[in-house]
Structures are given as structure tokens and as C-alpha cells.
Image (cartoon, rainbow, N blue to C red; front, top):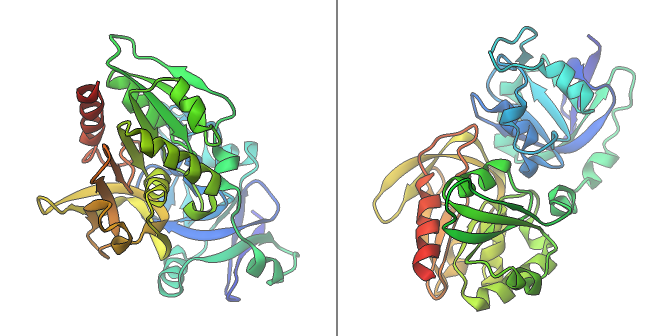
Length: 357
């Protein structure tokens, strides 16, 4: 295997070996703590523009299983693991990780000390990095200037599409695709919802013409505050007081549309084992998370009550709105690659929608 290097914007260099596609890649270096779900991680739109580091030391042991994908292609800028399994074993396996990354032009790096890299990110915060092969330059100028932009634009769908349940339909739901994972649609359809997925730039008037019983704002990538046009359309929909549910980026967008504020975390919350406390009961739920921004706690006073808080740092993980029929969570509840603890929130949303009809 060819030698390859990870260069961080603070000048730190890690030497490893190349796998997957050959070449150079630049992105925001983040780590995820999940022990499973690497296929969901690779194809999660929320990782757009990022170089993802797995803290678990061996990745790829059950190979490539397209049924587990969260979108139709990998979304990461590059991929870093301590080691990868060259002979995967699983009855659903359709190939190995190296071949999959090559096919999708994703540059990979392995054989580095991922624990040391994770400690650097934890202590110094998220930083830009690039992967280069042996013989390439180690310049830092492009690293310092790199910024993820147009993330939602690059991950949303291109056309309106409707998904229907096999049995009786309970309600009609409009899903704003801000970079949605496929599991979100699947879980709503499973509960009897006719789900119409619309691109992120869809106007509020178009959504109202669909006559939805409820509206869902999906998860997605990037800085929520840069989506000013989307926020403006959501503000119009909020005024209609149609039942709404939002997760991930959608949770942040809904807060901004209601006058809230967001801020960037030092190194984010990423993995399938992040604890969130439900404040009304004190019960702690294990959740799947992938976000670098949060809603500022005190920015929602008088507009919404914090329903969930991150057990580790106290940041906002959920909101229940006061004057509109809406609630939201920061974590993922689609269950793919993660725990099932909070999947009941789909049922809560469907109940809210059907009782409002």
C-alpha cells in the first residue's frame, strides 16, 4: 500500500497508508465513536464536507451492504480508520470497504494512531485537514481557508417524490429534505404516513398546495445559519400552525425560524452512543448523534421549552414549542445504525398530526 499523510491545519502530520481511491482530499476533520454503523456513517448526508475518523479500531468487518445506506452514495470528503477488514464476513455482504471507496472516489487513510488524533480534536476543537499521498506538498494555506458551504444544496433531492404505506394511510406529511437520511422516510411510512419529500428550496406556498396534515424538517449538514432562504420559508409555515416535527439540522432551522440562535460546538457530538436526558422525567436515553452546531439554550426563552439536554455538556437536545404545535430533537431517531430508544417520537408526531385533523 502507498504511504499517505493526514495534515492538520495546526501543522500536525500523521503518516499512514492509502486505501480506497487515490489522490488528495480536504475537509473538516471530525470523529465518531460508533462501534457499528460505518455504512450509515459513510452515506449520511450530515457528514458532507468532512473527513470522518472512526475511534473504533477495526472497520469493515461485515463488508458493504447497500440496504443499510442512508443515501445513494458516500457523503464524506475522506475516511480515516485505524485498520480495515480485508476479508469481511456477513450473509448480506456485497463487497469490501476498499473496493466500495474506490468505486465512489472516496480517499481513505489507515494505519494511523486514531486515538491520538481524536485527543487532538477533543483538546483543540474541530479543525481542517487534508490527506495527501507520498511526494505531495504539505502546504497549509488551503487548509486555513477551507470552509463547508452550500452543504444542504449539495445533499437535498432534486424533485418532489411521494412515498405511500402499503396499508391504510393515516395522514399526509410533507418532508423538507435538508439532507435527509433514508431511514426518516421509512419510519414515517411504516406508521401509515403518506410522505411527500420536497427539495430544500421549496417555497412555503408550494408546500401549502400539497395540503399536508403535518410537516417534518429533516436532518442535514453544515451551518444552519447560512440557510437564510430556507429559514424564511419555514417562518411562513410556522404561521400556519400546522403540526411540525424536526430533527438534526431541521431542529436548528425551526429554532432559527422562531427567533432562536445557534452556535458551533468545540468538537461536536457524533456516534451511536450519545446520552440525552429528558428533563420532564430525568430519564437518560442513548441516542445517535451527528452534529457540530447546537441551539443556544437561553435563546428560546418564551418560545419553547427545552425537552432534552445532552447529559455530558447540558446543551440543547430537544425543544417543545409553546405557541405552535411543534417539537424537535437534535439527535437522530431513524434508528439506522444506532439505538431504538427514542423511536417513540415518530409515534408522538403521528398522534399529534392525527388528533389535529
